[in-house]
Length: 228
Length: 226
Image 1: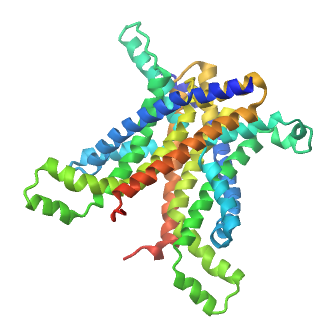
Image 2: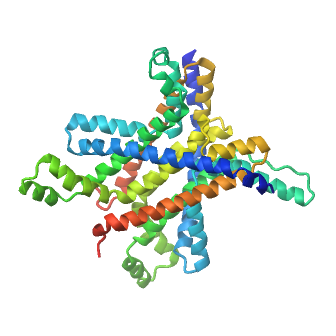
């Protein structure tokens, strides 16, 4: 066994861990900001709005994330026009490409989760808010958003864990997050066992912490939904 | 010329679908066993099943695939060496892919089947016992039909995720749709086009699956619509 190599590479794993966490948090933040208005629009919009948003979520939920990532990272280089535009310095960076893929993918799942949360909002709560004379903006801020977020917390938590796991795909486009570090160690030292086991354990610890955090959040904010 | 490449990609549909089908079969078997263990009266069986599902849901698919394909044979070979054997053990990408995907989705199926089993009303099972049903008749006539209805939404979801997860095996060299798309992309210099062809294939699989599963759900729905 070659565990001493792993110990010597602790710094690499630490920077990998930092990238994994950074990718997860950044993707979660941007996809959340995208998904909330999309879910509200899907729920309250007309037939055309609904069809467009459903089309977007179908495309991104119906195809593998790996393909979406490759379409963005390798695929966009095919277009001459794009390669000569001011966007190219950004679009040729693997970091921007994985973030773009993760955000678009996760926002599609989150939109559907939030829209389902809204669909379960009791009709009476909306009518009560109207009867109080709340404007659309106040209703959204005080009634729809809190109801949507608390009701979809369990499923959204699942999505957050899935997204954290999905960041391992970033290693396929040269990024050195946890999986990338492990792959590099296997190639450099020609050991196949220890690096991946270490990576697996790190993900396990991350998952357990995230799940613990989510349970706490559920008790804290969605506790009132539990039927006693 | 470009059409030929597209046909080559779609020709690998058989590889992807065979892999997905075999993994689904394994995951259903593991899910049944896992659910039975989770609901068992023996504590160690419950702990074992809990550890299994926790591991499968706590580690990314890609890392599990790399663990099975690279780390497992490395461990076996170290063991063989320690016993003074010069045999060399290697896993075929097919075997590694089916084992990994089957094991991962076996974990998800365990949770789906466990929830379904728990939601079959207790009174009906007791009524069956009171009517003198044996364990097989009980399973076939009372538990199975209801369990299928209750497990179907979760099962459908697991299948849709599994079908897409098969794209990962291209990374360990199995010549599936994704692998061929990559080959065509590199050979022609038109990556966007050929990854789009592959994406279209997976989208078609998703749409067909959703349609078929909706028919099955109607078949097992509470009220039969004639």
